[in-house]
Image 1 (cartoon, one colour):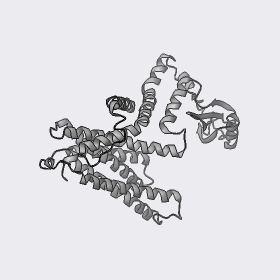
Image 2 (tube, helix red, strand yellow):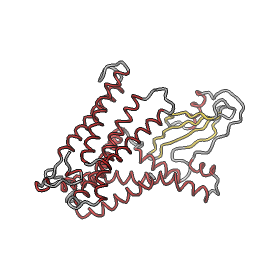
Image 3 (cartoon, helix red, strand yellow):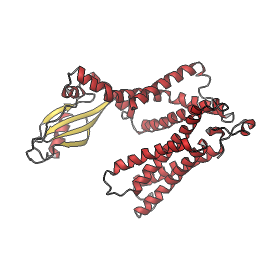
Image 4 (cartoon, rainbow, N blue to C red):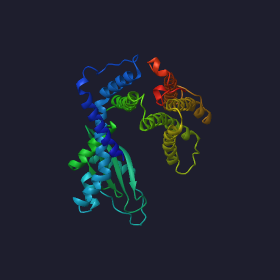
Length: 375
């Protein structure tokens, strides 16, 4: 499903560029917030789309490669090119299967020996994780994962047996062209090839891309404001529930992290379920709530209130001071980030409530879309 969504996004980016190419230079950065809503949303959509176009194209292309490969290409290649031999397919990626457990007990591998062997096999690599397999068995081994920092090829693996012998070495990029392509797509998609500055740019461009999709929906709805069909009403309500629901889902997972018992089995899965459940419930609620704009406003306000109160809730639960710069910097900046995000959601709820048609004649007849609804 994620691969299909990525392909659709790639088509949307491509067709949007084709449609706007003649006006690209003229309207690249033109934004008229005091004009009619249709003009304002259209300008904002073009500005966000222009700024984020390379990023959106890269995200869609790499996501399609990663997801379609895992769901379709790998199974097909294993059955055709490798005659169903999964082991041969894994070797082309540089991740062969390890030995199976024998059932005979033995001492655990010595970590110092394993790390020394990994450093000797790949001396220029930053080894960051040990994955121990068949622990306590004579067939135990350790996969030492590392970063090589070689452009778009980064991931390395050194497999060391329980006896301290190097069994397998995977250099950055892997042994075959397929492995190099997949690794480059993953590194490019996740931004691992650069430092914190570019990762922050990734985050900002991701927000711009999300807003570009939302403003595209609003442009569609504004153009059909006076002759709304059922599908347009549904789109308005799904947009309100989906966008406001994303904010509520973020707030809900942080709140669940605070309130769920630490001893709860499968606690992480519960948090994930609450995240997606809150989002889906918000979309369904938007379909039945009579006013789409009002629903989005309520969701944003509730999300903002939860996030603003979370630092105080955590401080009360852990008997600490809130916003304490003398304490842990991680906790301090987490508190600060949650409060700022909550304030932004509250500000967004206020702004959504103030949106009104620029044409006074349009206020006489309420329309079932976010831009023209009352509270």
